[in-house]
Image 1 (cartoon, rainbow, N blue to C red):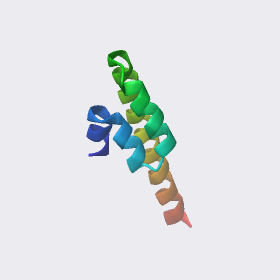
Image 2: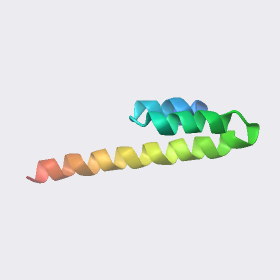
Image 3: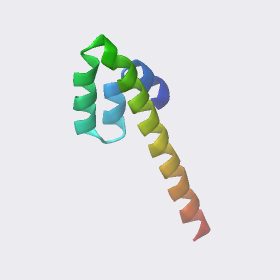
Length: 64
């Protein structure tokens, strides 16, 4: 669900992962039509990275 949010409303995706400053920068980037695509890609990749980090941390906790 977060990935869809990052593609449709990228700046809101940053707020859901706890990065409000990046969300504001992304919102400013989205004010231009050209900036929408880079903002969506940026939000998607960051969300994917956060999800992978959470999975790794969960696996590490299970090992211990």
